Length: 342
Image (tube, rainbow, N blue to C red):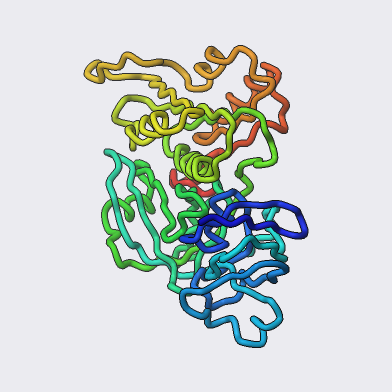
């Protein structure tokens, strides 16, 4: 059975099935409620039930009898038994999310291509990272230097932090990632960082333009869009040099089959003779302009190398896209050829 949950202060509403907590249902609907541990221990998700009834599989540690008697609930554990009206502050701005510093354990390593590694980090059991799709984390090294990597998963899927790390020739940190790191290693992270995020109040069609590991934050955004059920067209243009550089190549193809409002166009700038490539070639943002001569009514999200991002921004603005409707994440590199800020 499904129940309607309304937030009193904003009149936003979402549906909460019996098998999901109120928090899980809110996140799936694209509504950001505050939370911390998602285990009922910290109390960050505490709010008030103005109408309706909830239940718990187990009574949360951070909710005592007096609190419950006053109508308070922990929404990371509470499941709706009836329609609800609740009182809780929604998180609608970046400055409402507290950044944290915490150790994180390397849970899994997956080689996605010849030069891209997927690193999945697990936070301590009493911490879950709250973030907006598209943000990034800083990995803090022993000498205090930071390396920044985009979060490649969506906020509702937060058991792990998924990173896509490219092997940069001459890069000391990526040499460590590709040669020494192993499951169980501990990193120190600061997160979430950055202002690259979806404008969920907009009803304009979306174009996403990604180059290289610029696919990572776009992947998180797309997974958020799909799970939130936003009904607006989204077209992903993804650029790479040759076919082997398109890591996770089957994922957007599967999305295009599953979601009718999603389109996917890969573009190779320099395909190799043995690629057998029959798709588009050239610069990825040129393919966007060829496909959409009129871009003025679009929201555009761009992520990747600075040269691509800045060239695309300039050309899109020249095509009539308002500057404020272009959202970008340029992967800058330091003198050691490692990403320092997205």
